[in-house]
Image (cartoon, rainbow, N blue to C red; front, side, top):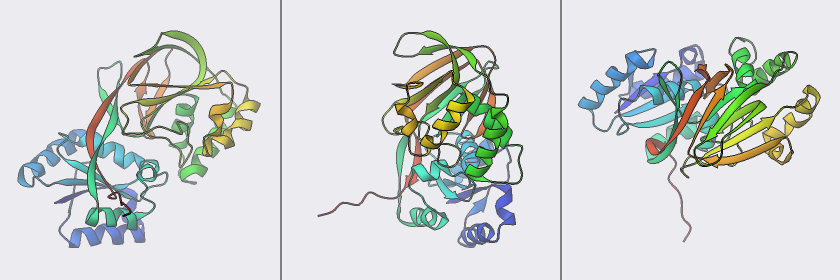
Length: 294
């Protein structure tokens, strides 16, 4: 049984509406809730009735984020039909377009992959599959979410250049789970379960959601000019070679210090300080089956 979580704007797209309507005609149900609190019991009831339930996120990274946070248990698997703007998680799964997503529903299989949990000062927990960002990139995300015009990477880049005029650093107290604590002024900290955000910007280029580790990228205090010069390299991961960028791998991290915005999967989850923990193999996600050559 397929339960569809549909991004509202998908209904306004001829292509998206056709895809969703096709799934409905083959027996899929559309979830009615609009937030995790409402969706969780709705999905739980469907799972009682259909043990083979698959929640299908029909949208972008924000829709995937909502779907993950709405799962009442992790016996329920998650699938993705990329109908959003950034689609970074779908890109990680090598789902290039909606057709690929539909093919996986027909002939793929679920695999267990890692996800992260962010604990905010109010005691709430927020799950994520992609990248959690703190500092300047979160400020850019906040700006980008106010735009209705450009989409995907272009929207992120427009927001970035607007935010450059008031770029600031944050004084972070950093406590990795497996290494020494330190305090430093940083432009941003990105905690990657997967590699990219912003529609293909590989901020954590070698992150792997099946290795039980986050890839953590720290960007030291930099000038606006340097940031603009290094920015294009983020699209292929070349930024990590710059001396102002360093990386680490860990299964958890705490970030404290002054208040800073926190985003995950392109969605605002709150402000720091935060704790970020990895749940290895904690979610079932549909992917193309690996092919072997004789």
